[in-house]
Structures are given as C-alpha cells and as structure tokens.
Amino acid sequence: DSMDIGFMQHDEVTAFLIGQLAGDSRAYSRERKTAFRGMVAEVFSPPRVTKRLSRYPNQHLVPGFALDLTCTDEDDGKPWDFDAREQRLKALQKARTEKPMCLIGSPVCTAWSSWQALNKNRAECDQGMLRREMTRAKVHMDFVTMLYNEQLASGRYFIHEHPAGA
Image (cartoon, rainbow, N blue to C red; front, side, top):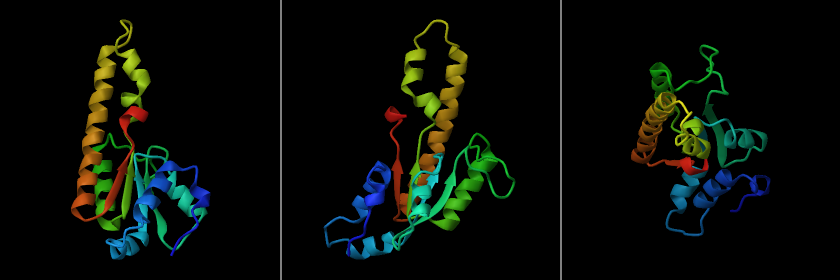
C-alpha cells in the first residue's frame, strides 16, 4: 500500500513525516493506518507542508491549519501573533479541538538566527533589544513546547525545526 510522494521530494519536512509513518515495520501498521488519515498542521510556520498538501490532495494526509504572522485569523482578520496571550490561548484551543495528527513548529527566527549570534558580540549592537528578542523567543518556545507535550500525551506527533537552522 504505497503512495506516490514524488511531488514532495524537495520538501524535507514532508518527506521525513511520511517516511516516519510509512516505515517497513509491521509492528505499528494499525497506528500508521490511523495516522495516515490524519491532519498535518503548522504553528509559527508559514504554510509550507499544509500548502503542499492542499495542492496535491491524497487519501492519507490532509492539510490542517497554519498559524503564523503571514496567516490571518478568520475571526478577526488579524495575523496570528503569538506575542499576544489571547492568540496563544486561541491557538491552544484550536489544536485541542482539531487534534492534528502531526504539528509542525518553528522557532522565532530572528532571535535564534546565526546573524543574532554574530550581532550579540558587537559593541554597537543594542544589547537591550537583543535581550527583549530572546525573552520573546523563549515565551514562544515555551508555548510550542506546551503544544508538543499535548501532542505527545495524546499519542500524536510533532516536528520542530531546530533553532540552529533558523
């Protein structure tokens, strides 16, 4: 029961996800069949995998929500801004209600980027601004970690982009 994933060969996250679910082991075949009919969602990530899945529908994976500053909240028409506590709570409720099979998340790129690592040692760099950005990034990381823990506790999956690659 193989599926054609050639359209995703250049999308490492999607290929990894499908590879993990489509392994050769028979031990988890029932769980894989259930998971393959699951939703993939993205948080603090522009729609990449969900967009790809929308363009190439298949019977196993369906696109779910994508919550990012580049996406607008249907309720208020504003971008998803996880600096706002209300938006984090709303995203948490959405994840709890929709129960994505796999949740894909990303770090705050500005704070974790290699450019910031270079900037923090420059004398002319605003150290206060760097501290504020890092605090903001840690609030975000705590939030997505909470989402990931809920995924694990419910027997679902998550993928997180490593900050080193941001």
